[in-house]
Amino acid sequence: MANITLKGNAINTIGNLPKTGTKAADFKLTAVDLSQKSLSDFSGKKVILNIFPSVDTGTCATSVREFNKKAADLENTVVLCISKDLPFAQARFCGAEGIDNVVMLSDFADGNFGKSYELEIANGPLAHLHSRSIVIIDENGDVIYTEQVSEIVDEPNYTAALNAI
Image (cartoon, rainbow, N blue to C red; front, side, top):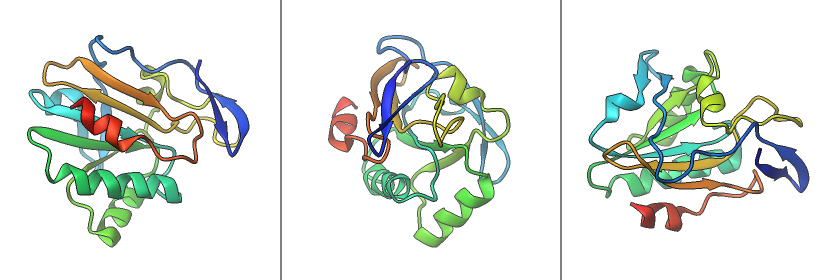
């Protein structure tokens, strides 16, 4: 399990992010239009998974805004922003913010994504939500970069993530 903190207080995830060089596990998540999306829907593209607890927090919202700005210039790359927020909340946020370069996906239905990628928070006040993480998958479906943000209120390292592409 990964040891992370929430405002300096120790919490844990249920496991560790996938290792680089391994095949990324497929998943089914709910889009803002309530359709089902899977990793295989984006095959042949580089995929950035921007994963976070809730778009209703400042840091999470900032990460979506930042990747939305950067995604416009990325060739053959899609950014999937994943949380357990309801698709309606994700759609409301994107509409209010003018977010249109990322794909918002929700793991609210069964939580299997958070469990499969072992980034679900195991304890503390955010238990069962997703930890702040980045996973980048290449065109062949291989994991080429991961970041488990050690302090959940901190932003991910955007530069390192984008340089991995």
